[in-house]
Image 1 (cartoon, rainbow, N blue to C red):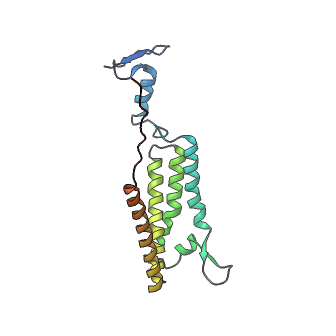
Image 2: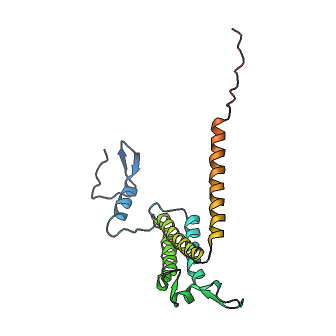
Image 3: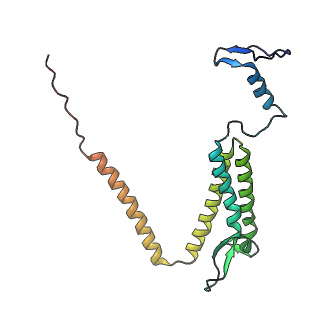
Length: 190
């Protein structure tokens, strides 16, 4: 069991013996206990490494920058593009309120801040932001696909999906039925 800390402080760190963890630096234990208190910092308490934090932070910034860049062509003229800001000021995007697009730069800034500060939950935030934005993008894409396609394309896409599914099932079934070759061990003289 760990010894309790005393009020006196020595110049050299004392060693506390713990049956589970072995020898622990008493000063390190006190620093860990004080950082977990109310005044402790939430930053870098077992968060991702610096390289991954930087990549996640820059990907969050890409959401912010990409919001203001052109998204798609509005007219047949190649010079008229709409950005996320332009779409946000419009009526609706794929049947959802246009003001929901403000979430893109806000989530990007929050993700970058969490990554650069090194919070433990940065990875969870990155997954959540990406899943949310991808789900929204797929929803808009599916709505536009449904609204602008006819029966022939649906038959082709359905047939392609069924073909893919049957190909995978057939491949897996043939692997299970394939004869297994067992190497015979050489006979030993005895």
